[in-house]
Image (cartoon, rainbow, N blue to C red; front, top):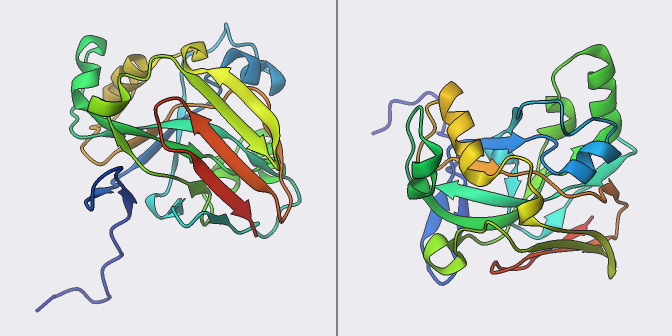
Length: 228
């Protein structure tokens, strides 16, 4: 018999390609401004800042294929990202050993209430209200690294209603995957079940209800979502 005073929260999981098993999620780390062109379009200099991370909540993940337009915002943006799923972790991991901790990769969206995020930036406040809201992290299927490869390069593309909006390459990341893992592990005890959202290329923009978004990254399963 459980001694919990309320029911335990549901374990959030992500499906795995070619398997009836699922990947259990522990934490979600997101790197900011990790593609130079996107950094510039957001009004910043890509050559003058170290990497920085924020977090989404685990239960922000949604694999239903639907994204409900959130309340209290009139300017919600898409951001297509490569997701790294970790099978192990630790502290002070070296870049040379970073890939030893990766289980696989997937595609996700960092949906953003841009107007609310903008207010937070101006007031020097945290971004959570703009980034970590309900169902703000649509995700697809995880492909194991043995099949996907190291994902050091490859096309990353987003179309909205059949029109290409983002089109870049993973090798355009300012901070590469091993650098992100090494940096995070200096400040956190990263662990199995952690996800890293690795940044978005240029071309972010607003969505409206009824939009259909299709995200593709070479070697990974396509992710399609509809804004409802």
